[in-house]
Image (cartoon, rainbow, N blue to C red; front, top):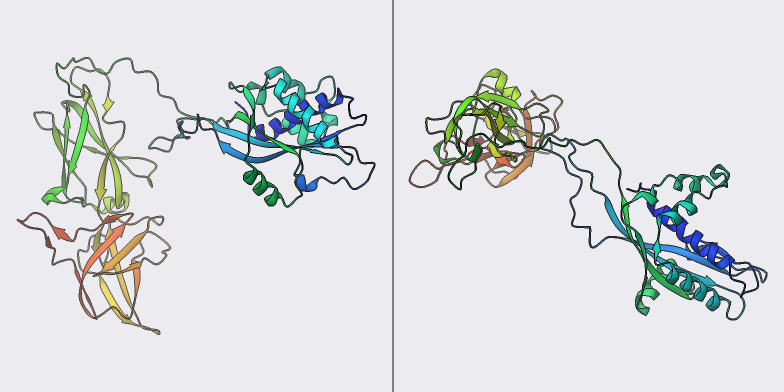
Length: 434
């Protein structure tokens, strides 16, 4: 693969190709300068200035054939798993400049013929252009020395040079953007440049077997989790509550629920026991003092590690962990104090300040939003996770009882009771505003 220097290396190779080809031509009867810069920088101010051929990279676009390939990806633990290349097409303008009649036309004709005869840049030509042995590369400008290590010749795709029929209005827009006078030009596309920056990645070992037991059905042949059911028909779970997890082929030994979160470098593991049928288990979320600071409100990933029946090695369910929404619980005096939040009206100008704690504790990198009825406010910055959450509402917030909802990373504290015949608001989730 090529390095990020590949774009500059392609321009250098093309300029070398045109320079060598023009030198062999004698029809103009004079020397020709071949450059690779912006057209507005080209100046033929003296009558003695030689004609000039300029190569200008005016656009870089994603390659249409390879742009749908995978992007650089990481596992759920943040480990890099793939290094796909960046595939680009380069778009050039070849422009001829001359002070005498027909010089520009003759020069552009030679350039177009050279590119027509060399529709591909082979590896040998690229190496000769970027490492002009026996010339000492250290004698060349620093930028050219850097291009010598671009690895452009080592990419597995061949560079193809294709003429592009550019409409007049598009050509006019380009020259207007350059803010320079139009000169005879031809457009070309060079494809495809593959830029790769190799970084360490993890690659799993091949799977030797998916289990020793053969199941005569069309269900997944390995232990699999299907869904999570919080208690009382809720869509979120709270610490201290049992969560029912449904699955398949969970029979075996050494069952451990693995809970992962984006803010935790190490997953939390909880021992569980499946039912006799091996199709579900109950996960009891702890509500101890230690759990208040260990867990994080928000979206978790759940999987199960076990030793399946008849197997000799432990396995973990589901390549993609099941989502488990852990809701924040509003408290006031601390992690274990299940009392209402406090609201105070005052200050200049007058505001309504609400102070509360949550269990589990919020990390400093989490976003918290409090809703009182239909009014919302963002939590003020905190110094340490144990500090209370402080929300400031405008004085227009009317006095009285307001329904209370705390949203952390998109997960709301439960406000609606779903266990009855019809949904209803939880009367305990109200805050009196003075």
